[in-house]
Length: 242
Image 1: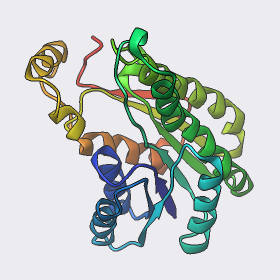
Image 2: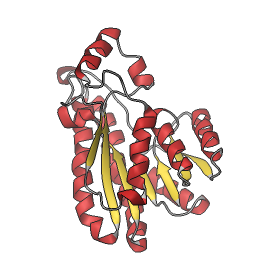
Image 3: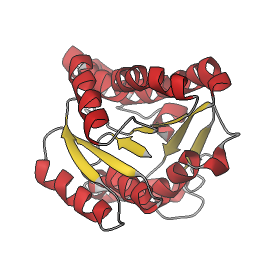
Image 4: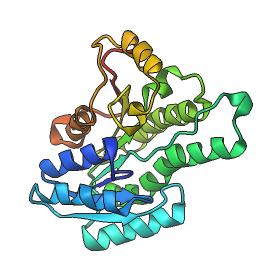
């Protein structure tokens, strides 16, 4: 079986790709710009005894996504599991946010979910099997100051997940989302210490999560053990909402 993980050259996406390879999936590793990092992800996946190949694509571009899916199908077979992970930020207050900052975040974070889901769903329907797992964020559940673009895109992913789950459930396809909180990645490492301290005070477990903890949840949703779970959003935040 084949899994496609978008934005999997580093961070959460890399951890998801490696975990799925550990579960026996062949993995299509999507990246936008960092080919070397994507190749490193592939090498780690291959160590688990599966096939892994890298595919460059700007996931906000529908035609580029279509070409990527065709290439994946030729080299690894049809996509059985789609993990829509790719995302960017461009944080600033709305009063200072340019149209370009809004559009870039919206297209990369939300339009990409439409692009890839639409391109794999027909084949999944024909096979009467498929797993689509969308990476949202606690920002999409609760909002964040300075992230009107990111929060609204991530909230859109949750609505997309619920609607598509209703459309394709009778065809044996599940569609779920996970909403990570503060996870130890390059992005969180660059945050000011005062912000980190404030964030930790709001987290019940008093620590940031790891990419591997998110990956474990995604792997569960991709497995047969989650065959009766669909339309759900699993928050992976250490209890930031309670």
